Image (cartoon, rainbow, N blue to C red):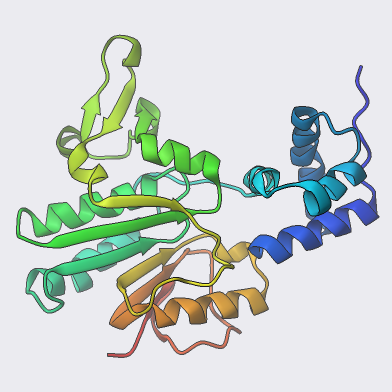
Length: 275
């Protein structure tokens, strides 16, 4: 039996600090076993023998590629279609009618800031197209994630049947192609959704390359992994790239309580920039 390398407290502290500095994820002592298990897979893949040598490689020899893979391994990606449905209900009741009435013109821009394997931006695209129909809107959704692995899944847009089972039948027929033969049991997103979404790798800790662009931003179930200082920095960056009257939506299990920010509270997990 191959012996698993030991992740010492000193090793864990070094990796914890590296991960925090690179992507803002704050790992407490209770995550040590998770870090050991996930990094051990990277040791096996790279052929590096110890956690100390792996840390040295990441910080002194790596060209950045292994760091991306390591962050992929550490980050948790859990999502589903129409997850946290109250957000989509809010949009249909309070936001989409304004778009349909032309209050924001015909150019509409949105950001799914932690899109994981694509269910969130595809759900958003379905919701927008269902509400706005065939009207001449210029709709674009930016979908980003730090994980190249889940972005690959999102870009392929192919999902097993059990992943789309919560989507109403008419929406499946309108927006998904059913697989046949070797693809039986899988569904591919149709071009009418795919064409309005751009998938890109992006680290939310980096400088944002845009200003006052988006009608609203989804950043759901990500900040739960950040400390208050990191949350505050990120939320204020979001504020500057949302148009006046636009919205920021965070996960239902998250809160901006104790975070200094200029957004107006609308309801749990929904915040608005002043008009």
